[in-house]
Length: 401
Image (cartoon, rainbow, N blue to C red; front, side, top):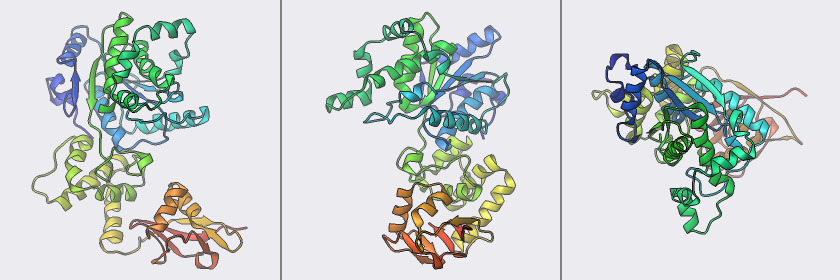
């Protein structure tokens, strides 16, 4: 969604837009000057652990910066952390992350790579996709060499570790090793620049130390702002349910964008669209333009126009959609377990579905289910319209036996 740097002769200034940190000072400009002098591309690294199957707009902020480097003629190295995902990044965590199975990691890795290409240029001359199992499945002698590059004191200076240490909370050896493994990724692919969120600052800077220990030039580091979720308070995250997924249906994407608080709307314009909002528009119209442009970017202008019309009909006017998808239900002993139906229809967890019912956010033919009304008589359902929140609808149909 962002303009290319071809219009901006000073690449260091253009590529440094909207970043929180550009470290060390002047390093990016120096890297660009060396690349120009040597007539070569910079190798710009992003490492992502496939701990979840989908990408949201928070990921797109960092991916958008990578796309700017591609548009400026450089090569992005996207590292799928299939090996580091077995460890779990401790950034921003107060407890050890749960271990994923190899099957989960592989499924998530394939999905992430496919979705990342909605933002990145897939030209092989501008994109290199690697998995860090290529080099991290190393002999013990190589692991010991890596461990010698860093002291325990260095690692315990890290903010989340130091807080847990002070609170006498456990820190696993796996978590202590994680930043070294991420840093070794920069050695393996000879990164010139590494980009990440502000929560990755420690890891990115440690990568410089590890490159130096291996006799390589140290990478420049850029950190990007963390995009707030649709609640306007916490970091966008699928686990918090406040995300806008880049593969969400157009109507869902438009509606969730319209739900963001006015005070964070400027961040969405700047970080996702790469521009400021039109100052002549009031908050309501500016948010409609934001929602329309995001949907248009990811689904096309026609889908954006249809999503806006859907929103106006369903939310503004309070009518049901013109077309409602069907969802099938099974009957057990004359009743239907609604949390399971909602989870399957809308891609939420069963616990989230139960919470929505208990909050009065679920209705059948405009009659809200009561708190605790999780099992519903089957005769109420066939042909009924299931509504979850203001914008999500399904026509209920009994599965054939």
